[in-house]
Image (cartoon, rainbow, N blue to C red; front, side, top):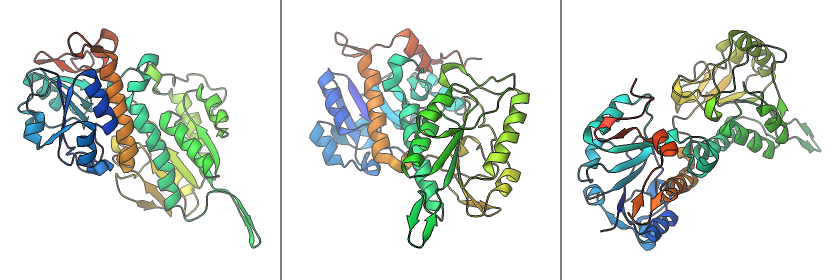
Length: 375
């Protein structure tokens, strides 16, 4: 009997993405697997049931889809109640938010499932095509600029007209990871005057390569921004103070600010204070990409437009889902690349190695096994 891959409709509030595409259905079938999809699972991402059926997937209700599943794919980890009927020890590959959802992870372990947290994919060369955080952050950085441009009451590019000249908008990107780099590129394409900053000095060249101006603290010892795995780490107190002074002077001149800073396993660092917001011109816009993790901006609220001192503050709890079709297509490819890389033809299933397997595996054999969670 061939391995059964099941994909359920996402049930988290506001989640429109899906963990499968017609393209990846065909690829799984080519590996020898069968694919089952819950009715209407792809509608939020503009993938009708007929497209999945034409690709070769079997459509059914949730119970029929999950019955006998060897692997369950999800965007956000499904509630355990939905997994009744899956095979004992089935793999569940999804985003688990392990740091904040420790009880759910423990419950997955107790239920005997092999939970694979896709957001803990190591940032190594051979795992780049499997990196869901990067694929989703790339789209989030783009969407942040588009949303900010929509909320901003003026044009982005400089326009020279017979009636006079319209100045280019000034956009400041704080945090130059995947999302920040895409935000820079998007703002530049829209014609803005762009500057950016980051705690990692290595990003200076990346900022320049995109045609933006780097804004960095100079000649201050104790920078600890070069974190492991491609992420930023915390800064020294001296650096934080120097950066705050530099940013305060710069931010007062900006029309749009995009904040993107996250530290894995910790609340998002506060980058923009109420006093700094007050220094900005009325009509300016701030988009906080980290609002769901506590926010980089004082006063930011998920999925609400907050106005403080005449400045609009925006932040989505789930930015990527606002581009559900593209986000789903990329996420589905990440999952396929992950499973296909370890596909054992003789066993007809993926067999994970230690480097990547141990990095993403949260539970196995009835217990929580990840070293970062066992305390």
